[in-house]
Length: 280
Image (cartoon, rainbow, N blue to C red):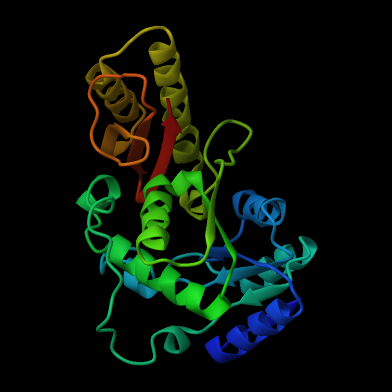
């Protein structure tokens, strides 16, 4: 497994693989890898990647000043070992100065799907995401890119970026990977105390209960949102948002119809912000 630190070296590596007739898959991460990330590596191969590149880069421009950029968990040695165990072909792990060698004055901005949900309290977040992913695409030159459904809004925003800016990349959105008790896998789960970790189970359980209500005929999604909010608060969480939206366009939906609807939520347990979602 190659460990690559510069954009020029990464581009040269990818061009050589392409001359050999191989397709390249990219799995962008911020490191602190878990089973969810590893499932994305498998998905890249299932969807046609001969070579898989995992990028490990904690992206400063997607964090607001009051967020956890400095304390975000980093363990490159462990991440490298996990990648090697999955037969990853290359890890691209550039330093910040390689990705942003001068004051950043040019951003990639999606102007519709990135405006609700997480953006209400993280208004600059998705400009940071689209900008860094565009730069990673230009460095790795992938044919296939894999992202997780847990970050559902991010996935939709990046799909739109690829479509609108004509990136020659196949986008794959892989299912959420959960702990045995239902909590969505996240690098931030390690921040939780034992009590907080127990209380977070309300997230996946309330989403599952909501799906059952809709399957049973409930169409008033406002009642479902209110119920989930109450359950999170009762479990000691602080609701950031609970919303029901069109699963693709992310427009608010209040009454369930035949079109797929996503219930998306974000909540704090202690200082840890977690997200989850389910498609109805």
